[in-house]
Length: 324
Image (cartoon, rainbow, N blue to C red; front, side, top):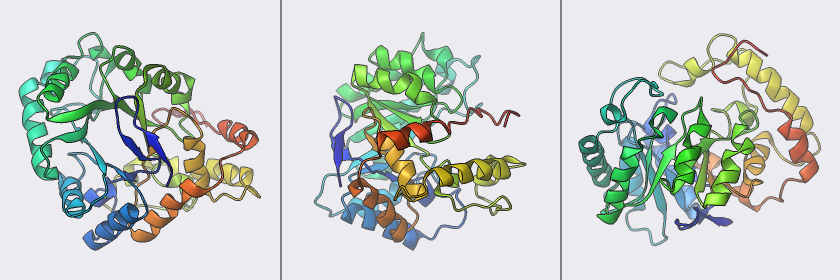
């Protein structure tokens, strides 16, 4: 397993991390024994970075991670997230930051993260979403700076709002964050326009989530595929979204013919080809997925000509606007 630094302030971590949303729920049926097997196998294979959140099963994901890390000798970096107080997601530009990330709320919420993860200090605490309306008054990050001084957190970060990822660039340049978590994949390539370059300039670590576009970029879905009740992807791919997505996935499959990469392998290698990326966090629901994802680190680097052809598959769909 190859490693990279989590920005200038962070530790050395595995370039393939463990995305722990599915083990908390909301991804359809998920047995706890499968979750434990997936995490255990990933750790055995050298994965040393885990990303979770308070909202992943109301702390269920965090609790499973805490149990699994007990008694293990290797150093594992665990990142978690605090969601804003109830309201619009992503936050409305009319929201006041103190109504969504009040200091008392942040402190209480972070104490809960410490209890659930059974630690005295969080490796990385990320705000789970943001709005550029708050960039002129990033008070929550001032609170996180105080919590760093108090020894409650080591690093502070933010997970970008899906529709406006560049809204965090001011935070990066202002020195407010050590790490950002972005969505970057074959379809969503907007971070490559500016955000990733700014991360390199400022020494901010980059965690890439949603590498498989919620599963579509593994190439396993058909136009008729549907998700069970309780799986958030039932809404994500609602209406005509699945057939439109599958048509674009088929075009990428043709691009990869004779490349030696599977769809999933190519999706991860494409992301890791950018030097600003610290780690990519595919979801791993069982031991077999952990093995397949971890193995990608040892594959040969993606050739520049293939990278160029894959960049042409960017899909500026934002909130699934009509354009196809």
